[in-house]
Structures are given as C-alpha cells and as structure tokens.
Image (cartoon, rainbow, N blue to C red; front, side, top):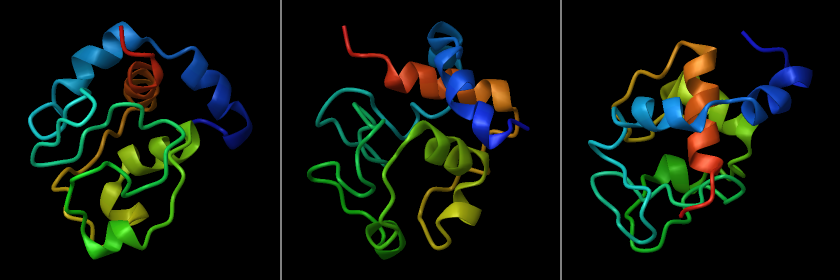
Length: 114
C-alpha cells in the first residue's frame, strides 16, 4: 500500500494506457464522455471535481452527502473500497485491491480528453 506522502507521485507515475485497459471493468457502468451518464455517472474530468456533481445523474443520498473533492488520494481510497469510503452508495463494485491498478486508472481519468 502506498504511503500518504508518496501517493501523489504514484499517480503521476501511473500508466494511463494500462489504466484505460483496467477502466474497461468500470465502462460497464461509467463513461468518460462528458454528459454521458449510464448506470453510473460520467467520470469525464472527475479529478478535482466535487462528489455528486455530474449533471443529470440521480445520485444516492449517501453520495450527495459525502462532500468529497475527488483528488487522486480520495479516488485511490474510494477505488480501494467504495462501500467503506461512502457507506450506502449504490455502486456495486468491490474495489481494486492492487495499488498499481488504482494509480493507473487514476492516471487515465486525470488525462485530458483528446
């Protein structure tokens, strides 16, 4: 597991190409296209945004009241265990236990759209 002080560097070193491959597990429910909500909200530009802020998506009350800014560190914690970080959220995903996988997905999500 990454130490908190090293986490930011790990995301910067994350591999967005591999992150895109890992994100395919997420693409069942999430899009990275702005405004394209699916079963889950669009994750376009998620890094730096407040939680429950994708326009037009019906968030759970747990996510609405979470009041999180999606920094790389917060995304890492959420991707490790969504249910632990935001109890009562509707995302039926156990999480990504591998720290490198999480760093790669975050690097992919942080990459500007082409």
